[in-house]
Image (cartoon, helix red, strand yellow):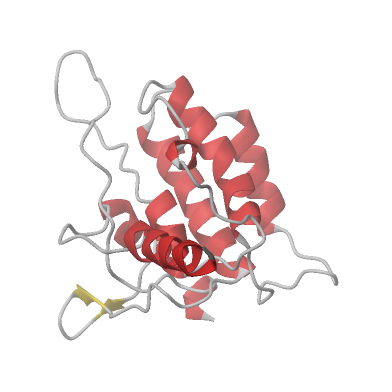
Length: 182
């Protein structure tokens, strides 16, 4: 019985972070979320299975707030704007290199999904579909962060200005650990 659970957990982890052939949302490049190789103009290779730290999550979350403010009607909203201010602050107790678990990742991603749901972009949390939810205390990896923040709220030039409903890609590229990759 234990071996079936281990196999199921392994399958979930592998399938939840498998990169598809689609590229990253354009805002990742314009907001310096991923590192671009200047010689090739392509994203640098990433290890999506590497552990993610709190600074990396803060970096992509602040970039996501800026993207929502720029491209979502009504912007990111008060909750996310205040969150970005909080995330950008540091104190003597701040440790951006501390590891991140799945519960922390979902807790920080939830207000983003609340805003996307309110805007009609999506209709549920992506983790709500899990029939066997993962352990919230398990370590999060870069691929899981990228998966949750791979939304693209760019709009088509259409008369009713509805959000683009394309499937969110699971991209490649390295998430910067902080400002200028430090």
